[in-house]
Figure 1: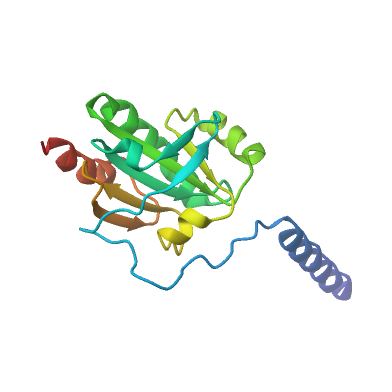
Figure 2: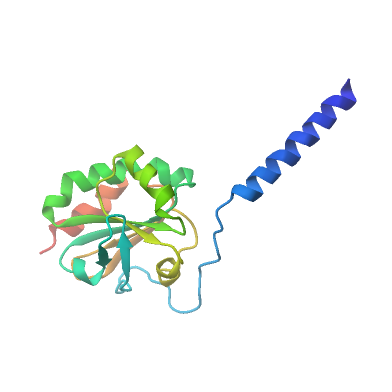
Length: 177
């Protein structure tokens, strides 16, 4: 009887490992050489396609406070922070604040159901080839960049954020000018 339990445990471990291996989303190493985007330096410009088919460029958002959030559907901390991002976006978008959620390396077939599940209304951009994540030297998900009205990164954050933290970064940027 004990031998069968060990056999069952080994079988479950093998099947589980195979499932994880074959269903994983490839996440390439995206850190690259060069100066890392950081606080008090200009944010690198980019242009990506949004879920609605429009192209969004960071330069097009000059004059707004922007929170860029790199994320993926498979990332539990990303899921945890989405309601807070949506709440802050809804409360402050009338004051020239926007959230740009950049999904890293996933097709729209995975992203659209996620957007619908969380009822997200801010722009969601697709970084299918991870070029923008490489530009920002994202080393983990979620990673966020708080950018002022002049395109300068004022803060970065690796990990899930709550509403209080997001507002502590956004509100001072909205008060300038």
